[in-house]
Amino acid sequence: MIVQDVITHLEALAPLTYAEEFDNVGLLVGDKNSELTGVLVTLDTLEAVVDEAIENQCNLIVSFHPIIFKGLKKITGKTYVERVLIKAIEHKIAIYAIHTALDNAFEGANAGLCDLLGLKNKAVLIPQAGTIKQLSTYVPEKNADAVRTALFESGAGSIGNYDNCSFNSPGTGTFKGNKNSNPVIGEKHILQKVTETKITISFAKHLENDILKTLFSSHPYEELAYEVMTLENKNQLIGMGMIGQLEQPMDGTSFLNFIKTRLNCSSIRHSALLETSIQKVAVLGGSGSFAIEAAKSAGADAFITADLKYHDFFSAENKLILVDVGHYESEQHIKNILVAHLKKKITNFAVLLSKTNTNPVTYK
Image 1: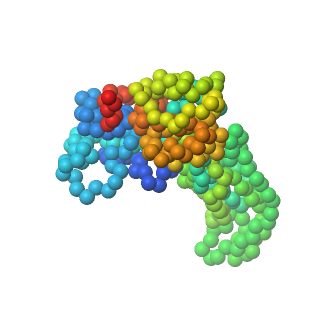
Image 2: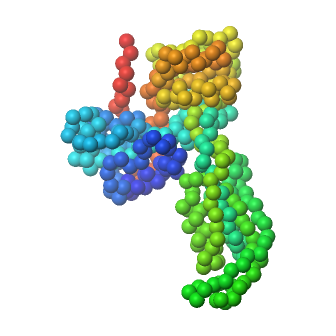
Image 3: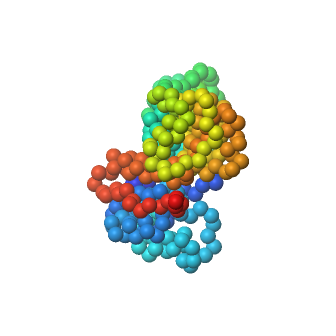
């Protein structure tokens, strides 16, 4: 195996297309064509993590957070970021970061947080816009079934719980080839009228290259007409945060103790407790203050996240309980998700869970 083989498995779980624009995801260090010796999975890539990779003969580190986030003008070893990069390069260790691509994946970071809390009926809290595309193409009637089937097999036509979805309308196509043409139907310089089917089909944004390759290879025409547009529909399977339901409602104090136990938190911060019980819970691992209003609009009784500022807690407005469990605590489960996914896909190479505690915060 090579490094790219692991990347392919990771991007099947969390396509980089859905990462936030501000993020820096993907292969950050190393050669994707390097022969793989082993994989070390971590939340953060620190010097100690690189040492751990060296010790375990792993030449690929899969990290949730990107070690390179802002632009670097020098790599002299002055900062921890620079020292990590120097050591990784010296030892030919590749570093791959998945971050908000996994945050936005339906079976990603926030789904894992829901599972830790036993939340049922989970749904995306803030669906991502601009992730659904629509293809329209015009095919000779006799070829329409073959082209449509090929597009379905490439992943087009899936809408929610349904697949093989398309709209088809008959019509007449016209064309006239010039001297350089090689028409499949008719002859050069002669106007042709052909009974055609217009196929309209939607697909996920990250599949666009595959869908177009399939269209070109399955369509009979030398020059084919097609249109691709981005739909305004929000994708209910891609987006930030999740919301779900506890098996049984809890009072505020019991709920907070439940969180501390499930997430192994030594302490948490929260807004005022309410007299109402808690059953509908929103979650967003990492810095999630931007999703407070979305949690309120979704009718959440509580919103679990991290990095809330003083004034953020006022935003609860006695409509829900805001719970800050800590950045590391809200994301510590993520490396387990990645290890489990890779071990299912890769059985003949070591996929190791880093033993290095990368939490930069100490509690007293």
